[in-house]
Image (cartoon, rainbow, N blue to C red; front, side, top):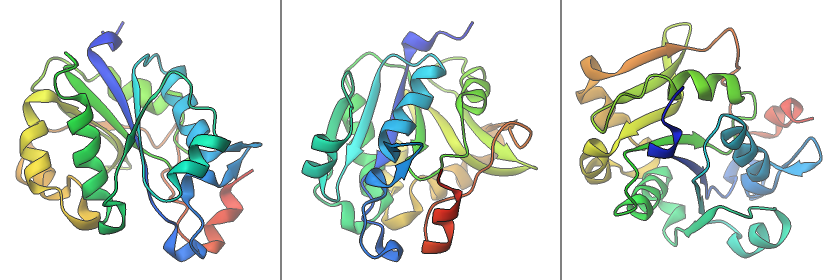
Length: 198
């Protein structure tokens, strides 16, 4: 059994849905609930008790419409500058909590369920752990960052690239966890992608 009390879930849900006509992704409806609620539910189903959610676009509306009880909500006033700012805000909110790793998931990937999250969590060893879901060998989300990496990630997380640069420079340390058999890693980015929502 994974030491899930050492790990916090971090949902990046600040995006404004630019290519969706400015509808914040957190509030898109999936199975009758806002997408952000679904994303939190997935992490909880995988056994994570501590979940931090980074909000940005229409944060107030998200707070009112989504049931995020039990989560720590983190406001990212710089959300328009891209996912990197949300990752920095989220990791910042975990600093000093005693958590030894963060499992980062994206709000707009409802095809990734608890099975994939559990597999990535199982790759956790200690605060130096780096693990990532892979889909037919291609690295994707969720990603697990041991706390030893947080400062380095925060220093390099810019624009929409998130932790990409950091992960590229630490490629040999990443444990890839194949998840293509239990999850689909599509993003909800455009009007056409809305067909994935139920």
